[in-house]
Structures are given as structure tokens and as C-alpha cells.
Length: 202
View 1 (cartoon, rainbow, N blue to C red):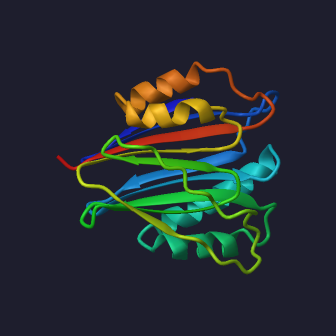
View 2 (cartoon, one colour):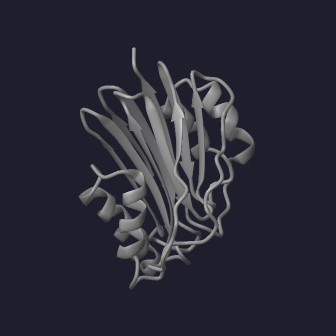
View 3 (cartoon, rainbow, N blue to C red):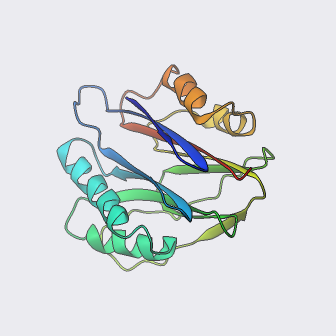
């Protein structure tokens, strides 16, 4: 399933498919823009099916309720909120339009790629593990941009590692990138979700 979100300063496109044999995808994602920022997240519930979806959905629901908080605070809130679930891995990126920074934090095997001004794409490493309510310290990283930012978040069922850097530095649009990704062969043994975003200050 493909969806597109067009905002005042940003555009984001998503593609999601469930594990083979499942009607329900265990991944959830979140996209929102305000006057001051864009926030995107992907959560992957441990395992697959209904219980995985409940865990990942709990995380994105928390982000929806508290999107005004810092990325670090959102990670703590998600961790606390997943205490009585199967658990989930998660990645969050928040783009501050005024300060022209993107702030990222992640736990587990959701990949995050980012490129400012179509220069070299960077893949910051997430914290190892998953969120299930245990005390955690989160690594938070900031990235600066001047006029344009492209980024991608994707769960481990999405096999696009070799293409991801080129997709960001040579992006036509998030819509075109997701259309291309949806046509690639993917791992049928896991849920798959990708968010592709572009921020343009001009």
C-alpha cells in the first residue's frame, strides 16, 4: 500500500506490505507536519501479526499524542508505553524548520538514512535492542541542512540497502522513490515499511 503526504515545506511518501500469509502488517508509521516542524517515525512490533501491530501501534499513538515533545522524550514515552506489550523497535526523526536541523533517535533494526543538499547520504547507527519498558538511555543525533533535506526510514523487511543512498542523493521526489521501491523484490518473510521524505526551504 502506497500513501503520499504533501505539506507546506515537506513531502513524504510511504510504502507498506505485510509478511507473506498475513493480512495485518506488524509495522506502524507516523507522519505529521506543524508550522514549526515535521515528524516521522517507523515502529516494528516484535514478531508479526496482531500482537506485533498492537505494540507498534501503541508507539505511534504515543508519538501522535506527544509530538510536540523532544525526540529523546518521545523515546522515553514510547518505552514506558510499551511496558505491557510484546515490545517494538523504533526510529524517530524530527525536522525543525526554524533551526534547520533534523534530530534522530532509534532503537533496533529500523534503518535511517539522511542527506543534506543532495550530498553524501549518512546512515547513523541506532541503539541495539528494543523497547519494552526497561530503563534505557537513548542516543540522539542532530543533522544540519541549509535548503534541502532528504531522508528515509525503513524496517528490516525492506531490502533496499544497496539503493538507499542513491535514492536520497538523486531523488526526483518521494513519490517517485516509493513507486520505484514498491517494484523491487522484497523479503516475503517479514513485514516491510518505508518512509521517504523531502524538506525544501526555498
